[in-house]
Length: 88
Image: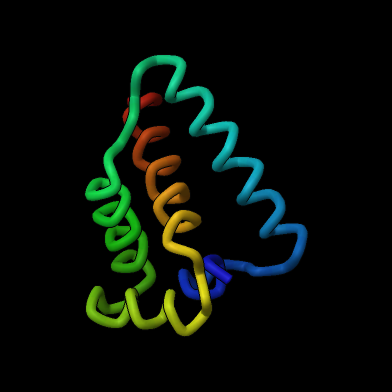
């Protein structure tokens, strides 16, 4: 559901790959003490949405309409921003 909101391929295989990738990234970044906050996760998701030309004001309602759990999108945002900090 999150992938659809972010206008990314949303096949079952893509969804599974995204979940696995997020978990690997989160595990690796935690090993090095990289623990992004919920606020950073929200900012990261807004950055991703902006890169897909999704207005920030419509992101929250789109996530709610798609029934994307807040914990899920926060974990996704934390994994992305944490990984970027890890590889930088």
